[in-house]
Length: 191
Image (spheres, helix red, strand yellow):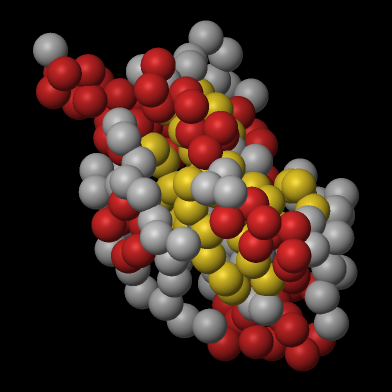
């Protein structure tokens, strides 16, 4: 199935980074600060069993292909032997002037930019030793899968890179301040 453009991508924020960098923790803490803002955190569809460390819709591969065939997915990618996607309905906030936040993939970012040329990408990183420790703590994969994730090195152009090694609140402060500037710039461009 061909990919369709994503309108209003100037308000699409894609968070990327290596597994274990703390993207879910940063997003959860940031979400608490966004009262009064029209921001939707897109729920992903993943061909993986549901797990307490991540909220997503779990489907099997046939179910995933069915969603693609019916045109229900706005974006999709593969990583680590799994299929990931975001339903079109999860991006509806863009058409009403709000923001959509997607926990995305570095490897998929170039393809996504073709669909959504004005998106904002933020990368959350951490040193390899910390990534290894965090992946082991979440106990979602075996040692071989963790080693494969750690070996994956992808450099992608992003608007902001945050190294998530300090207090979570400081990382969230930096993300929030940057995002508020983007909101102001987007509003100015529309005026």
